[in-house]
Image (cartoon, rainbow, N blue to C red; front, side, top):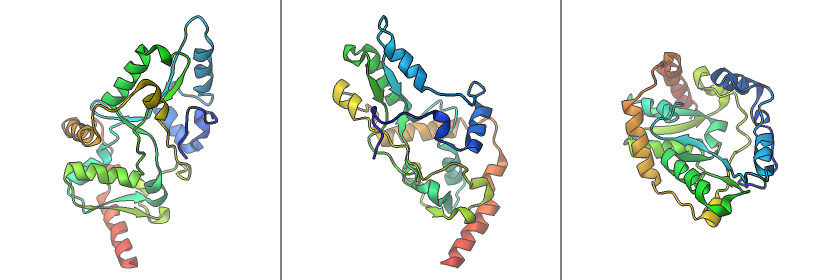
Length: 229
């Protein structure tokens, strides 16, 4: 069931395991063991002198994405790989996504709407695709005809294994901001992906770890899967 604005709040650090949080803290030095956004939300909403609005943002993709969220898939597609392998549990995982222009529009809408004062809003696309479905969406727009294959964790090449717990989906309902403020995406999904793909192709990551694209290991895993079938 999607999380709503009334769902039980939990510390950010409890959503992921220790290994993932170590990676996050390495990327963002201001995040420590006590990182927790809940007290900030409560402080904002409890200030009677300055009514506030809390916006919970999704994984945001699009031009300028510092995380290059589409790039690992897109590079393999542009390199002509016959298949893309995704760890089986991660392939099923669903999380909130949003295109940068649509997310910005939602933020602007909430900032100027008087009725948004004192409210909490989730911002996310209405449909929460699984990781495998998301990769297929990228493939459709990129014009790639290969296969997206979910494989057991023990058969997944080391560089593709993901340490986080994929058993817990992180889907969010954005019904409230749509119903109360009339929000709707101005940029449809296919256009959003077209723009993002064009930007990713023109702006690849400045630093690329070749170990993350170990195609020889991926070929061995793909061959093993075919033999097992």
